[in-house]
Length: 113
Image (cartoon, rainbow, N blue to C red; front, top):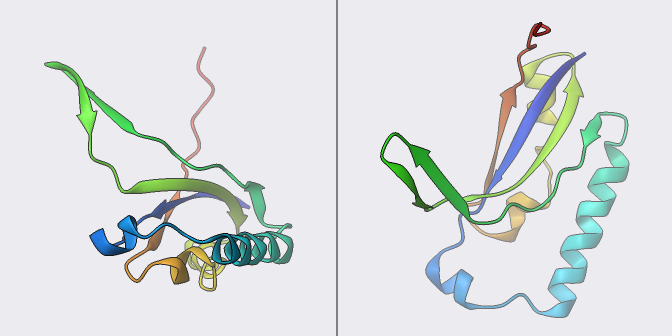
């Protein structure tokens, strides 16, 4: 089995961002996420967590970075396509019209001596 990193991107419009999620919608979303997690428990290595603000570091120093990454997960799958298929019905995709999830193959790092 290979490992894949799923990065959840937020695509909320300015009006969607300015409208807080009410308690019922938040519960519905979290229940849907929990159901997804149960349905894919054999594939998920790390359910991940929400991500916060970003800093960028380069040869000129450190600065704030605009970032649309909002969470991550790690899954096991036989192929990149199989890994992507795990997320087809993920509730994150229905929360805002432009949300997306990118699936990235994690490469093996040889042992460092």
